[in-house]
Length: 602
Image (tube, rainbow, N blue to C red; front, side, top):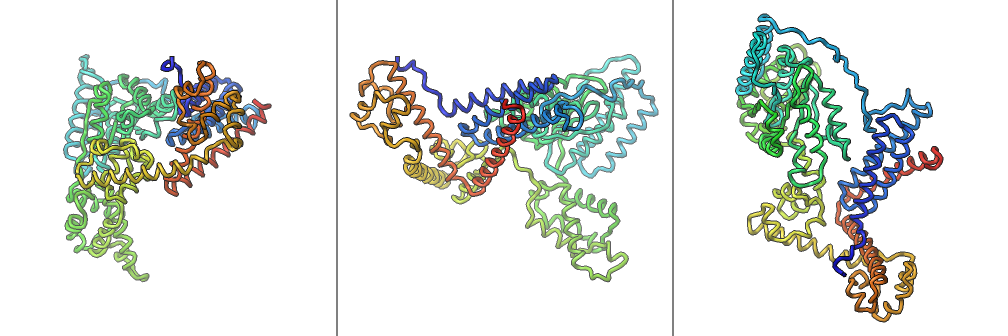
């Protein structure tokens, strides 16, 4: 009988239940919003925020807390907008808009556009010539140019096949671009858009650039709407998904994420054909992009073309610098022009050039120009004002030793600053990404690690393993010390002793039993269901009531202790961030109260 008794809800369960209820009501609000039932939508937005605000009080995961707070602000803002619209204060009628999850009106300027007839030989030749000219202006990327010419030829042959009444093999035209930042992926995507438009594959030559944040929302069903909006915006052209691998990284780690909805929404339209359909180009680092398509076989089968962009060589960078100098109206002195290759080659490393690529030339020219300005006297004139010398380039390239490469931080590593700092202090900085990617983002998370866990994470050297184990041991000692110090802090402030505690919970009949067995707050949290039976609570009903009260008190105490310990172990920056977030939530609460008051206490 004891084993079948359900445990009372813990703080974690309460947070999940409240959060799920809030999400359900929020989805109902969005549906009412989309249907034009704005009064109902306002009431449900307000009700959803109420549940979500309560969920925050029990939630442990800081990332989830931040997401909930963002959604609360969004829902309150949407409710305020609708209220102003209904009362005539807003601009126009209270129509559903982005941010409220509103559905846009289904209007397309090109809905009635008439498809042009087949291209003539002259038009095909002109399109091919323009593409070849554009490709010839690109520096480096020889393999990409070759693939682009092959693509142009294939599309031209397909046009000729259709003109003669033959069928073509397939209509798949989606692509994957891999390579480091600054190698020209976005530039080539625009060339693809122009080629597709000129050859009649697409109706437009525009490129809509997005990343994960433009597609993924915080709650169920909202991601699909957000993604659908971007797909609609790219209709007839190209949707360029930069750093697309971010859409599956959390899912690959087994973490909860709504990115799967974005992928599903895109896959729904990837089999569509015709000039008005969307062409998808997924871009990112090669290794991560390979993992991205392998995660979803259905996605991999829909991507026909794969382009890999190699890093620029020193020769390529020299040519790019020369082109940019000429385009800007500047020039190089003979000694600067003759030394440019050597300056770039010796002043930068292969690794640094790989991180910058084409952006290296922009930085070099900017820093060289800065040095030229410092070098020239105020009475300079003529060519002196626009001529870079060897000394300018030499001093400019030195700045790369001090500058940090323009590298975007992997979202999987966000929120792990505390762990990164602590590992660095123990000489384990190189392992920070391994720890953070595995979910160890806060110091308190590390106390659960064993030596085996540390080895599994990728720490292999014995000396480093010993340091990691020592770090975990020290954090455990701090956690135990703080826990003991804080035990006395989490007794109900209105409770002076055990008698009062029992009476407040309508358990006064058991005061003598508790006094007989010397049960105080120091041991109360350790009392088990079987302990109560040994104390004399034989009847199941009373025993369950007492145990439920103890469990609820213990879970609440442990939750508060964990929050306090986490806060004390956190950095000053994190505490300031939490303070700001709480202040923002207070403002949301005030706005919510004002909304309720204005609507008659909804």
